[in-house]
Image (cartoon, rainbow, N blue to C red; front, side, top):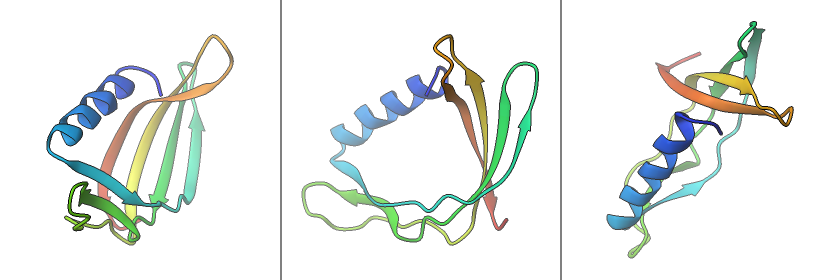
Length: 96
């Protein structure tokens, strides 16, 4: 990841830890399209996150779970080292 997404994620992790919240499971990625631009790339993804979510890290109780079709848009930038990194991730909504 790259900023501003990296900073948002790290801040969210700190907040979750202080409230004893952790993630569980895994997300299945299904990239629908990639658009290259002069400044980076945009990836459209239809994620299946039904087997993932948030849980209480002390009790193990699941607090929520994901959805069958999560419509996601990710903006990527190419770093100086040649690696592509997510600079912004946007949840568009359910259904793809």
